[in-house]
Length: 132
Image 1 (spheres, one colour):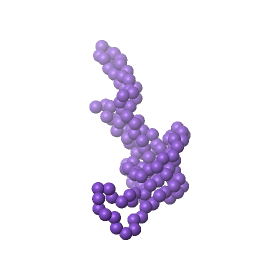
Image 2 (image 1 turned 90 degrees about the vertical axis):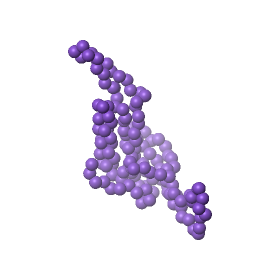
Image 3 (image 1 turned 45 degrees about the horizontal axis):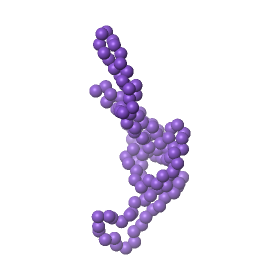
Image 4 (image 1 turned 135 degrees about the vertical axis):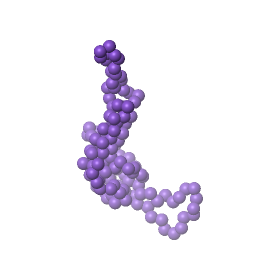
């Protein structure tokens, strides 16, 4: 995979657009397709083990928190995480509404081309898993 811009949620601004790749397991929804070839029973699945889709996110609001003074060490640290209010849309164009996000994982991208490349890479890995 090529070098990509690193996604840093702390650098986001209102109106920024970013992308993620969502993985869905199809293990419980797959159907085996049986065939008899040269007297032997063969099968394959109708769908891959996992499917992936690209989600487009738009930042609608940001709540940045800053601690003044001291905070006593405890099991619960200060609530210092930045929170984001975002809208999201999948590849089919369906707007799924808005949600609050307080953490972004490793599979978020600044550039859509990076998200597409990652999606294709993961689809290839899922296909290879089916061959084992």
